[in-house]
Length: 114
Length: 112
Image (cartoon, rainbow over the protein chains, first blue to last red):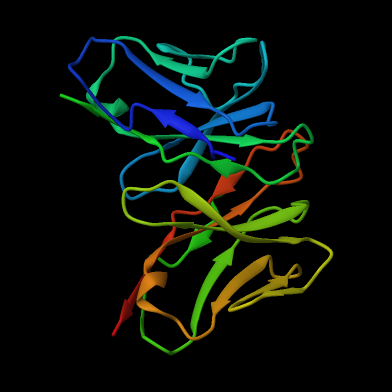
């Protein structure tokens, strides 16, 4: 049973470009969470999604960031017009249908904005 | 809101016990978690404890929970060099939505 998959593992973008980060949850998991880890900090919650629904986006910056989890395919975290401060590791986690079940994390996407 | 607090660094000799401490923020947290992060990798769930328990043991790992002081600790017995990693404490603050709140992590270094 494959774990949570994220790609790309590393992404380099110039300021002003768009970044698209993908997350495929574990088989049987219908809940996806995105977290951001800034250098030498803990993870900060960004958004919680179920298929075709955003349940909690209280941790998402108001501008430039969006997330989706379509009926088919991976969850996507999209960052438009990236700035240097967006450089971080972005982790996706998934959990089974009961949200208080434990979350399993992917390996992360490390975004570097030049 | 307030942050989950952890010491940033801990060094121990191979074979000794390690104790990593955490102070969480919300007495309504239902579950408390310990995750391990190795360099360049994602977070691996090590163990978790339900808030109505005060201790949980799992092989070399012992979790102690003091709800009165909102203090959580992780003890690793017979620490090995492979245990060197960053250890994160996390709480759910009673959320039914599954959102977790993490500390900054404790870098554990194990010397041979």
